[in-house]
Length: 227
Image (cartoon, rainbow, N blue to C red; front, side, top):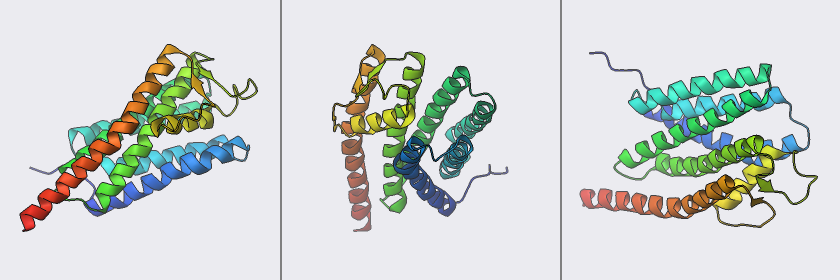
């Protein structure tokens, strides 16, 4: 019986590194540049598509979750194109929610791959970094969706900030919450926003501890087998 197509481990490792780079660009470069008005919509769409493609290559392995990730990536690309042609609230909401779901699938696929390995290597480390960044981006997309559906869900530093730079502001709030820094310049006001922020803070505390414990146990088990 013919085996389903899947990318080689080396290709997936390189794609994972590319996805981590794309996530860093989205957070630390894309946001500030878009705030300055130096980035137009087609460029943002291209970078989003790049993130989708690298995510697909990094996680596709011919398994059930691989097929689900492939379908999710196709949906995101289609909605991205629709949003470029018809930038309306309904297409924006659909794109944000589908993007969050797609990134969640990628995170699950990466974690499954990391935990299935017998010992820690560069791919495991890159996978852990990618998932942590993806978690911040997922919650950021949910915050933007909530603000779009319910304006005033968050308290901004000033009224002049509201309605401007929504994506970068709430992405900043997401990572501040994930790392439990909590500067206090943005505050969740809506009950759903508070629930999301609480959940993200808990995940931000538990994820590194659980992941580190798992990686250490993997390395100890591998060392014991060698000896």
